[in-house]
Length: 198
Image (cartoon, rainbow, N blue to C red; front, side, top):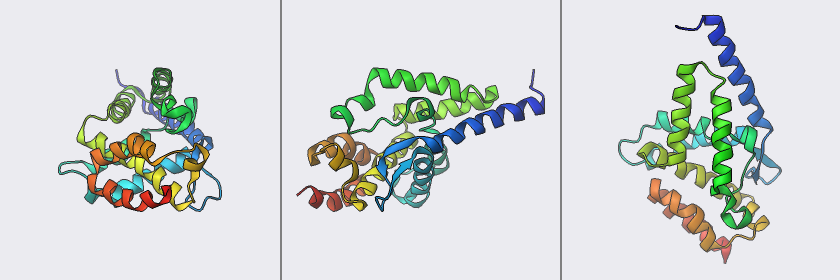
């Protein structure tokens, strides 16, 4: 049985209104001018723009429209979980089982606000991004890793200073992911970043 149009709209607007809360989630990364921390809504928008602009860095066959959709959805779970910086707590908190479980629970709740068909398709895109196994998700993940690197570089170090990050840590936690989805992009960014670390 299909939901009545007004019920569908109520569910869609419940999701959209909840998504507005992402604008209140502050991230560790600052704006490129260093004036303040970015919020997760700004981060998601910027990543969508990264995907459009850097589409020529994607592997053949990557569907940029799907990448953009993933990037718009990927951090909605931060409404419940908050930002977990990749360089915090020795770099382990970001990928911990506790964080992943909390994010999955948040995804259930947030995407569950939508009508069932949209809930399933949005959740599938989020799960695909998290698994980072398809070409689309691998490229999306590489952009998610490179954007904070560029922000830190432009802002005088940002979270690298805050978390006392070494170049080896940057390469192992971030560079590997960028290189997997966009090798030429990491080669270019790495050359820009390496001198910063002395």
